[in-house]
Amino acid sequence: MKTNALLACFCCLLISAGLAAQPLDSAWRNKMEIIQKTSAADHQQMLSQLGITGLRPGPSGDPKAPNAANSDESRATAYDHLPDPLQFVNGARVTNQHQWQSRRKELIQLFDKEIYGVMPDNTPAVNWRIIKSTDSVIGGLPVIVQEITGHVDNSRCPRIDVNIEMTLVLPQKSAHPVPVIIHYGFRLPPGMQFPEQPSGEPALDWKEQCIRAGYGFIVLIPASYQADNGAGLRSGIIGLMNKGDYRKPGDWGTLRAWAWGASRVLDYLEKYPAVAADKVAIEGLSRYGKAALVTMAYDRRFSAGFIGSSGAGGGKILRRQFGEQVENLCSAAEYHWFAGNFIRYAGPLTPADLPVDAHELVALAAPRPIFIGVGNPAVEGNWIDAKGLYLAAVYASPVYDILHARGLVTPSRENLPPLGTLLDDGDIAFRQHFGGHTNLPNWSAFLVFVNKYWEKSKHQ
Image 1 (tube, helix red, strand yellow):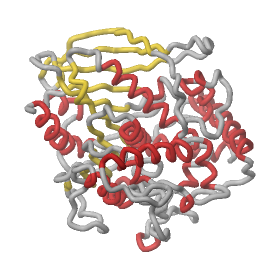
Image 2: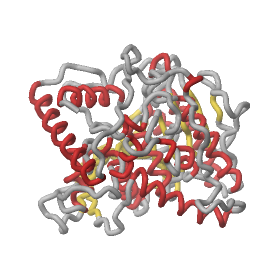
Image 3: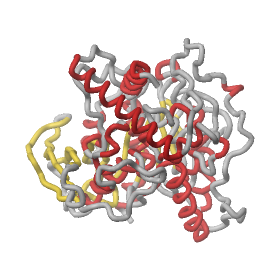
Image 4: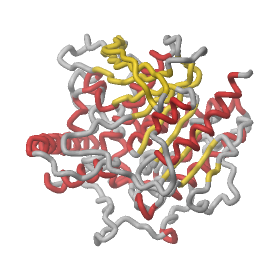
């Protein structure tokens, strides 16, 4: 891909993350051009390792483009089957909880190999330090705010320095340890800012809502320990583990690395007396919605998940020909989120060849509560594929059932509920809000949803 085209693709990714398009200063533009050239070179290096000489191009996110992504539901389900989460690779059926644990391990191995990559089993220790602690007020309630850095032991490659940056905010007046929600947070580049997101419904700031509910929250900066680009794959925690060398095709991608960081934060919280470590949720939007779902799938210590507009590579059925496609994910702008092996599905293989799909990623969260949210396509656009997210929740539900939980409780399996409908009677909740690419209109519904579980466990 030419540099200008790749630059445009990266800018589109920033905008899709909910960032307003502001003029980029020349220094930042130059930096981005260097990142994109390096990413393109790393992408090509991985293609060479895989023996792939060409990839199918992905559709455009611009609905007016000649190659616009499909937004016609009648053309979306050209696939003839979905993998069954309750069927082993050898064809045997899962009929009880014990067998599900074996099937779960099988699914993890498939996701490792084909999509997200294998996390090394010897990742280094993290040394946490409170940089700054201050008293503050949120929503009229007193809180304590701590800026915390986790320094990753880099003795295996001292030239690569890795630090996990986060902010922990807790209510000051609590007689008991409090639940905490970890929010994957964006770090804004110069010249970019979060826009006012039209919601179509009243919504308080999510941080205020957490504190008013009696919960704490963490803003975790994933890009502090693994950059959101292919140029960063030889640094950050991935680069540290590879001693600055290129990835192999089966190595972990950025989504798994971000999830690794969230798990290290949970390690820290398990030793923090003011936090109820058995009541920690993970939340994210867009690419961080993908990361939040991957975090829930791989680390069963997380109590609940709030997955916002995660789209392809997250909670959307990959086989659906609607909105963003596998070919987009495998481009030089997004491939770093995944294992190199995943690129094959935009080259010699197709999404129909995948042995797993997104509904099985959702199923790996079972039986824990998970809230799947998405915006109004008239505002957010069709790139995310709201119905693809909804169907993944539907098709994950049989796993919840076999674990004596309740999946998505819906009046119609195949039909997307009307805009604004909240489905939260089961352990999978779903809501398509009236706004755009934001979680804000769904925060109040998520807090009510998760409180059912956290309050119940408090009284058991």
